[in-house]
Length: 226
Image 1 (cartoon, rainbow, N blue to C red):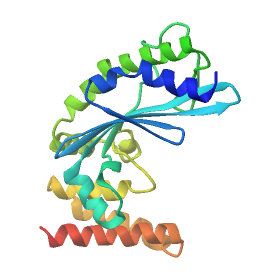
Image 2 (image 1 turned 135 degrees about the vertical axis):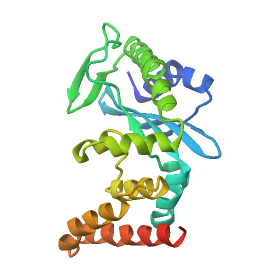
Image 3 (image 1 turned 90 degrees about the vertical axis):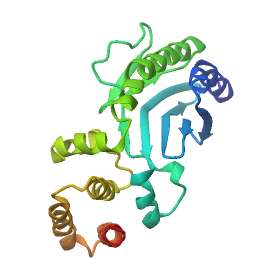
Image 4 (image 1 turned 120 degrees about the vertical axis):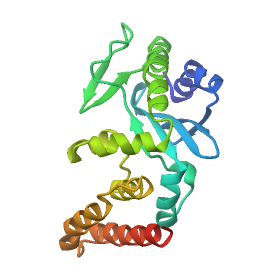
């Protein structure tokens, strides 16, 4: 299979998402299906790896953006709001809807599907359809309102937060802070102090120093608007 046929077949087998109101676009080796409203955004994404005439399809994820959260982060990081997302969901490792004949390997918690033939891609499309209609719609429904995200977030142990809250390029602290601020969490100040205490000794490192600087700017923005 060549790349042109691979992309054409992926678009054909995943066209049901366009019927669901999503818009398809491709950036490099990444496929995106997006849908936006005035207050939120939805995205289904996955990617491919190419080895000669062999293809691996991987990284299937559903995401949702709450503008009330992401617009505050956008103010300090810049960029287009439609590229920001708040929560995410990937297929469960023990799901039972992988079609028979669709070969895959696990890389960490990431499914890597062998999609070398039209039949393989048809099976991947079947898998994506099951993931969307069985898991994603329910996920979006469970988190229809921002406050539902805040409630679930507050129940999570720190090591489990990234299971729900998206972390893209070390921005999870920003997302957590806005969630706590907008939901009027009683431990917002404790969270701020925890993050500052964690990052302050590392600020000579340019990466951690920038995260701390942005975190403080975000805190000041939120509190000045309170």
